[in-house]
Amino acid sequence: MTEPLESQSDSKSRITRRAVLGVGLATATGAGATGYAATRYLRAESAPESQEHPESTDGDPDQQYHLTATIGELDVAPGETIETWLYNDQYPGPELRVEEGERVQITVENDLPEETSVHWHGMALKDANEMDGVPGVTQPPIEPSDEFVYEFDVAPTGTHWYHSHVGLQLDRGLLGPLIVEEADPHVEYDREHTIVLDEYLASEPEVTSEGMGMMGGFPGAPPYDGTLVNGKLPSEPDTLTVMEGERVRLRFLNAGSATTYRVAIAGHPMEITHADGPGVEPVEVDGFDIGMGERFDAIITANEPGTWEIQVHPLGEEAPAGRATLQYEETDDEEPRDELSGSQLLDYSDLRAVDSLDQYDGSPDYTIDLDLSSGGMMGGGDEDEWTINGQAYPDADPLRIEEGEHVQVQVTNHSPMRHPMHLHGHHFEVDGALQDTVTVPGHMGQRTLNFVADNPGDWFFHCHNLYHMETGMVRVFEYD
Image (tube, rainbow, N blue to C red; front, side, top):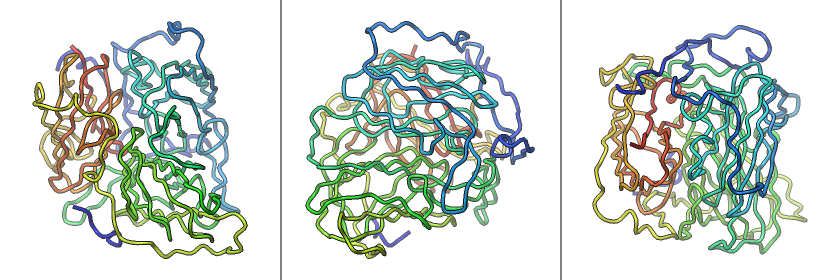
């Protein structure tokens, strides 16, 4: 049901924890850092020890990129600059573009004072589990002054992204878009823009206590100072240029660490055409909610000359809203208009995959029931943990599956907070579309996910609220 737009113990037991101080901007500048809970660093004895990249079996890559993780400065508004961590001295990191069917090689150089890694969010990484970028599970971390070469065939097509998968580094700016262009798109368009949504945190990232009234506190994110759209605060927003008569594809990516956003474009309804990469039958809406890690592509028809607001409102948060502007070429309007075109909000059930979902038909081979909760609520963990079935990673049993099986995952959220759940290495069917991240609403909300176990390896399944993942809301799917 849509709502009005106006409403706002096995081999894995060898995994050990190591408590370290919370990391953030203070680390980069040499100051101390503290947090609500010690940051978890995940390491496994079974993780590969060599940093040497396996030799390519498919010849030379079609595309090559180089990313350097560095300390740098970020200008978010006139007179407001912060020191943080960046890829290639920019935020968002450089947009990596590859074409359908290509093989890409990306060298990641670590110029940071601590270990790092990169996860390619949305990539299937078929037969390339070692490229998934999860330290302690698929690779050793990249040590300072070292590098790691990632190489893989890009799939599926669509809007994806890359980001650090170590500690709270994502909330420092280590992220960027990864676009896989379709050879034959199912929709026509004349121009496109990528729109990256994120929180603005002027202080260091650290796990804090989120208050929930009578429910007490839960481990969560620090208070945010604003909302960034393509790295800009609303005082000097990013401007996206269009020409009258064009069909414009807008690639929306929520790269935030702890915030769900509601998005709308003043004066322009949108056709949602892609969800987490794969295409969906176009559905017209006036706005949509987008959880952490999710991507929605929308096409607008540029038939209202002028300058208009792209509105980005955090849901359930006190952080200020963000915005960008949609500006027609040769317009005389300088002040953007903010009136909305309607109130129809996207629901997951509105999405219908373009590609066949026949492989998900019929009864699953088995169903896995997963309950999401804080440790204190379910009695299976500590109050400073988020758990799945009462266990907090890394002290959590793996989820074992066999190749070729149709796996159904029934997720129930026992907490009052949203949890965007992300599966590495696979897309799953949910409500008629293929996604790799889906938000499970609070207060006993449920989602049913179906996927085919067709990509052997060890794959993370976790909440993409960075602070929930960092405090335990993780499991690993292991192929037998």
